[in-house]
Length: 303
Image 1 (tube, rainbow, N blue to C red):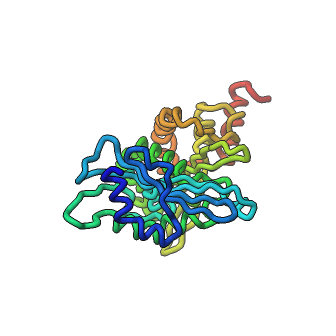
Image 2 (cartoon, rainbow, N blue to C red):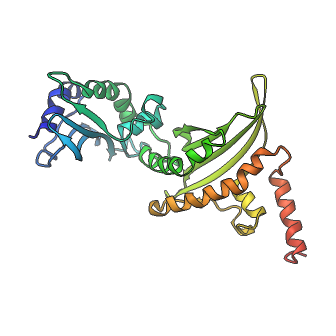
Image 3 (cartoon, rainbow, N blue to C red):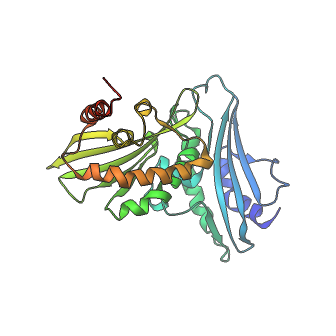
């Protein structure tokens, strides 16, 4: 065993054994990788996997990830979905722990005498968050993205658009259980402007995205929705899409193309969405459709 595997065993073995997780031989021969498994009699397998970074490691200073996974072959767990996520994403998205939003994807261990360092924190987080999330049959409703998928898409959405929207006073809010991230501008109260990126799966497990825009007003402590549209309605109004596309959500499960797709969405946000959000007299969905019909009649496309 190398120093990383020895540290995992030294600092976490007793805790994980107390939770029913035991060392596996599966990764013993693989360098800088180690895992623990727990198996239920009805064919449910939980795995906690530790993997050290290839590029940042020495015996006294290294980085590593903690991954959680669940596979079920059980009839009694037939409604429970399989899971695969990094602990850091579970903390950030499933529990919305603000302290871990900027933690990155890696945990860092610096050896200082006999100090347990970050492993003490890992045990605490696994005990209170990671293991309960992993072993709860109700984790993740069908139709929602799992944590790993959500983290992937949210990372790209925020990397493409968050800094630009912050210049316009928008702040982000993550809503993992709704597979959604919202950007909210409350600077111009009582008018509140919201841009919502909502992701969902269809019956074929394909992933789609919708972008919603909301205007709301606050009076005292009550919040009242004024109007809402989808970004696609604004694209229709501005001849960016044709009428046949108005009811078609964007399919986004091609990971390699999602970044380029979001660059296009960003352009539309700044061309059309911010203008619509800032004007209390901007058209609602019904008015947009009426305007489009009139436009098509004037162009001779409708009788």
